[in-house]
Image (cartoon, rainbow, N blue to C red; front, side, top):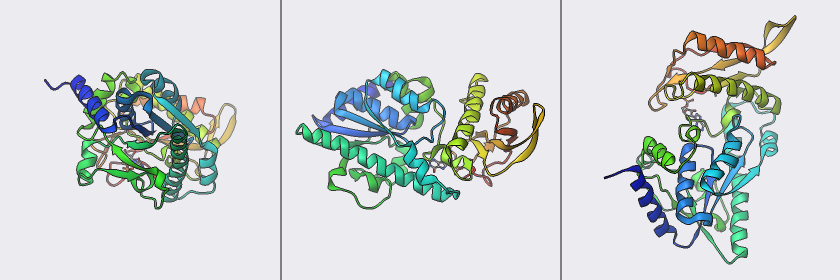
Length: 326
Ligand code: XMP
């Protein structure tokens, strides 16, 4: 019978066949797909896999630690974390345009990952080894969408940026190519990954960078991260994680409104809640969260995050609104 245990075994032996006694590299994003792909390859070739995680400082509370600590503890994967937080903040300084932010974050990611990849390749070379394989968490729907091609890639062509050292041309390893998302989650469970990781809702690559409407600064990230952590904790406590497709929490950093907190008037920022129900993110409806839950979230955010004095609910479907605000 076709079970997930069989899928794991079969993929592991396929990976072993493909990679032989070679070495592989994988970029962990914090998402389900790259985590499951890396865990499978680790199981197949052990520490001949090196994972790189670029900490761009735009993740939500606890997410980087989850990879650094929990994912490594469970999988035993060889992980290099690159702390690039200052580099990203520097590159984003003064930028408010959403597409510009995306471009900058994408470009900096390539720069940092490329350097890390060169380091990994260099270290292997010093031992007379080469790193010929790049692991990617491509799913079946991605394969269909892109016309089914496979083979070699370099880091930049994958991310649609031009020009790259020869050293960074790899053969792709895509152990999830035949799987749908729900199957990938099952494989993840099979491999012992934390539930919170396996069931993680979609989260954009540019992270909190596109959930601050306005310029991204350290202070604004700290404010948004606190508010977001409250929302996620309350949705989880209410048992709604698997019902909601995702719930962006957005900081309107350039908007201020008057409030009264304690004995004084405040001039703080609004936080937007954007809970959506969806099948595939192409269309979505706003999720009718229970009023009591909304009240609790609002009270907690305005009590616990000093810079925020108003919490608002986005009641727009997609279309016309997108899921994210930027
Ligand atoms: P929108 O906002 O277009 O989002 O309705 C649809 C889905 O895509 C996610 N999203 C992104 N994911 N990089 C990503 O990796 C991005 O720049 C990006 N923008 C939006 C969004 O979270 C939703 O799941």
